[in-house]
Image (cartoon, rainbow, N blue to C red):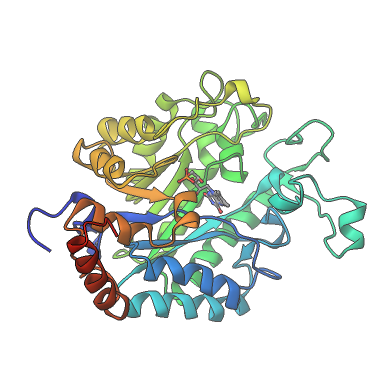
Length: 382
Ligand SMILES: Cc1cc2nc3c(=O)[nH]c(=O)nc-3n(C[C@H](O)[C@H](O)[C@H](O)COP(=O)(O)O)c2cc1C
């Protein structure tokens, strides 16, 4: 491509790792996994985005502990046997010049749920009868995620050590599985976020109370994960930069946290929002195109840490403008990619020469370029 390439398709280097472009497949759980294992379905699903031109393709949240899953259909990395099927995906991505990312997560008190399309309710007797038994969940405080939902058990100091050790082992497994990028999921009301937010952390010990206390669990975990993840590989953290529009964790808190994460070797902050227990729809940020971009922009400007913008970014021109205006460094695409796994390839045509299929796999591009030229002669768009 020429020097006038759109920023979305310009490479960026983080810790010596070259990202071929700035389009990222956002982590999305699809419930194809069984007992935490990746399989043909999950491999095929993720491979579509590799073929579809994304520079970095993230797995869905992979649980660092079995009890850290949201549902029985979540991906996991709590045992060594999980490594081999994941390596199949990272090998495939590498062979196609695409980076692979592993998102590590622990659901905390948002675990033991049905899959979204089954109702997204806490698992109960009917679920157990069909093989999806509920399990005990853990959290910083014994506070249920929603009214009427079973309370989690408040974590002891031993639990904190056990869970942090699980994050480290999971990171090592991720390395063995061949991933290029690791992302710590500290957003959406899951365990790490539960510790951060004053709405869900009511602890009286060193892991609760003021901002320093509430940040302690994430910062210690990050430091330990960074120690297990090679210096030349990027570490991302996904944050809910705010709990809601007015209440709870704030942008100012996220700025303090991001500086502390940077000091512990975090390279990029992936900027999401919400997911906290007790918040109602009225508390949430208003949903509009790019509604979370101001969060990515604020953290980037105030801390100098590169950011990922995500959330209702659907149009190539919209993504390009966010980058051109210096509001974020990478663009994550979620649902628009479920709709169109070739989103990035289509964006490269939309932002560049509509007849230039060089970014496409040649097996497709050779044909499509000829079809596009014929269509152009006939005055058609496609
Ligand atoms: C089906 C689905 C599954 C998701 N699973 C995850 C996940 O595993 N981890 C995560 O951090 N976010 C998850 N998200 C949030 C997305 O990564 C993304 O932040 C969100 O969908 C907003 O981006 P979009 O408007 O481009 O879809 C999920 C979203 C969807 C639609």
